[in-house]
Every structure is written in structure tokens, then in C-alpha cells.
Image (cartoon, rainbow, N blue to C red; front, top):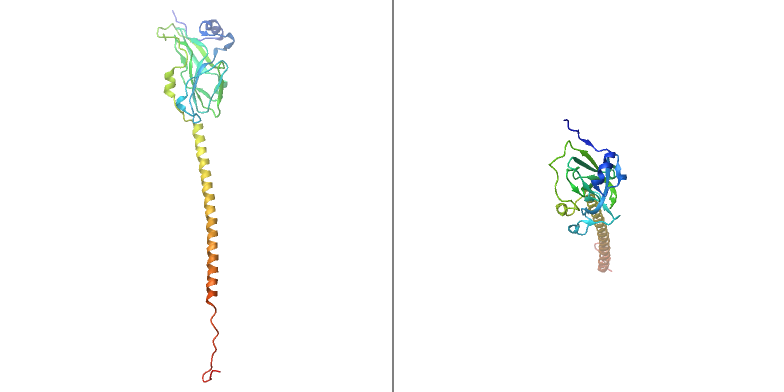
Length: 250
């Protein structure tokens, strides 16, 4: 008997089978041959040079509708709101919606979900764009596709339901992340400070040149005045009478 070929689930199949695999399931979130997942209740964003103490940054809890930002060049962990299950006869693939990726948000974590997995999905993302990316809990930015395997596999995940962000993931990336944007700003700040220092030194040199010129002029004026007074105090020599030879003085 020929085994059925592997195939991706159509939108119709997703509507039929996902109600028992995604909790909560909303039929309107079936997008062609994918299902749209949303941002869940926890987020971690790596600290940058604007953070007072990078070592204190940890997982942030989000209430419904709470927003957050991922600065340029920074890394983040996001989880899904939904509990996702993958049956033993299927494999799932995950990504970020195109309109969010076009803003610079890149998925740098895995791109598939193993058979047997059950829990909230964790996305590791990186803001490769030039501006902060603003997101909020409940925002639908993730996509998941399901594909059938040629048979049900015994080599599947068989553990507890995964919920929340794993603290070990946070520990591995804790601390300030030097982004290109942050380094560029530091270089500009140093360049500005150096230019201001050079300008201050130039002003200081000009000040001392002026003072020196004034002092030199005063010294020259005093020297000339002293010379005139010295010559005047000695007086001019008395006139002498010249007597012709043989003549007697009167």
C-alpha cells in the first residue's frame, strides 16, 4: 500500500483540525494556508546604552493591550498568547508576518515546531531596522503552517506543556547589547565632545595671544618712555667757544 505524500494543510483543513490544536482558536485568523498567532503575556528586550543598569533588566509581564518597544539593533524574546499543539503525524513551520518583517523585525530563532510539542511558542527576534519597533500584547504578528508527515512518528516531543519564557534563555543573553545604532551614537557623541574641546582650546589660545600682544605693547611703550626720560635727565652738553690760534681770550 502506497503511503500518502506529505502535504501542507489547506485553509479548510486548518479550520477543521486546529480547534483542538490551538487554544484559543479563532476561525477568522486562518490566513490562506496559515494561522495567525498573537503576542503573549511575557517579553524580554535586551538593554542598550540608555539603560541605567543593564544587569537588572529581566522578563516583563504584559497586561492585555500593554505596549513595548524593541530599539534598533536590539534583541528580544516574545511568546505567543496561544497554546499550540502539533500532532504526532504533522510538523509545523513558523514565521513573522511580512508587514512586520518589512519594518526590520527578523526571526532569529528556529523555524519549525516538532511533532508532539505543546505550549506557548517562543520567538527570538532582532530589530534590524533604523527605528524602534512598537508592539503590544495581543497583536497578531506570527504565522504558523502545518504539514502532514507520511506517518505518525514515535520520535516526537513528549514533555510538559511549555509556558512562559525560559529563564535560562534570558541568562544566556543578559547584559547590554552593543548595537550598530548605539555605537554610531557613541561615536557621534565623542566627535561632538572633541569638537567642543578643540573649539575651547582655540578660544583659550586666542585669549592668551591677545593678552600677550597687549603685554608686549605695554612693555614697548614703557621702554620707550623710560629711554626718553633717561636722555632728558642727563641734559644736553654746554656749547663750547672755539678760539683762534694766537688770539687772547677776552
